[in-house]
Image (cartoon, rainbow, N blue to C red):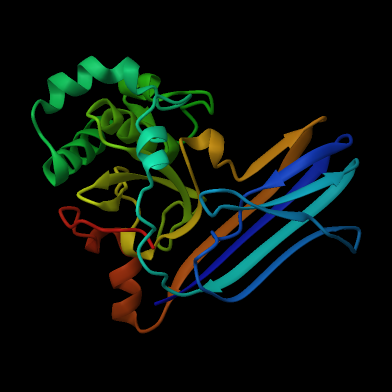
Length: 274
């Protein structure tokens, strides 16, 4: 299956700063073609490429004040299943983190899910979050944690993912955050889902039910959104003037629908994100 992904960011930089981008597809995702450009007034700037331990590819640049255009596009194929969890993974992804404080939802998780384990637990958590949280763009803050989402019952994809992760960790299941491109997503944007280590596999959970899990393309993986922000900067301020994200599956009509229409995703099926 071939997917085409694209993102465009137009920035206004107010002073000298350290810019870190996480918009390129992850290492290990087969790339038939790829292009990343950072430019200012027609001059191309060369970022440093940094690979983190999870396979996320970061582009880092020291840049002064002025406009900055960022363009990324790639044509990608299917990779194999994600690598097995290491002993370090199963420790790190069980711990509470900034946006997924599993210790704070421990009592709720134990009351809600009782003795459920494995795939039954995964499906129950997905269903609970999907049915109790309302997708509400503009009503949650970037500083909200899973505790806030549980209390307010509203959020966007990052909030759904954080709540899924926190509840699973509270039930002793290693869980992590994945930023991704999502063909068929409406409204189109960078997307976020959760992954859980169940029965020897990383399984993807999208409690927003706004994506087809088989079409997702991994960008970054981490404990929560703090590890996977598409744009980070330090030392000065900037303004995001414009952002455009696109992702689509290429092929015949049936193939495209089977990998990008959220309504055709069987939520009871266990799916691994390549």
